[in-house]
Length: 172
Image (cartoon, rainbow, N blue to C red):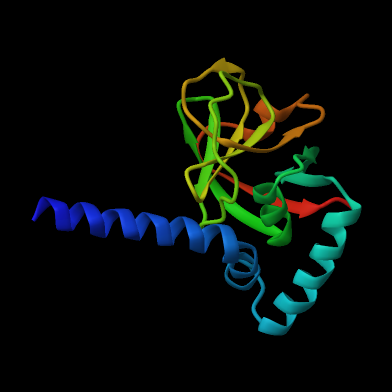
């Protein structure tokens, strides 16, 4: 019985990773848009794909404050950019980060432990947990780095305590 469960679990994990790495970007575009019509999704997905090759920055809007972030050159960061614009409610964790569990898994790169998290880091934890750090600290957890806010002045004040609505969009 243990061998059967082990084989089943192994096969399930293999299919999960294969599915995420090969089809996640198109699934994200279709599922995670905050627009009401499929037509809007198609047109914005197309323009986001074009923008991905032209821009390497996104805007992160918290309240009335806009922060510009430089995006990493990896498949997971590109998958995030393809689903923009995206507005999410981010919850506070440990007094140093805001997070949101997205409805779609989109990790395409291996996660690693950065050792040190810097204020302004935008990371993916697991397959779908978008994390924005607003304090610097050491960590042993593993993440995929998506980007980093270029100038974090005022980030902690804008983020505040508790939950906050954050909009991520392609820089114009």
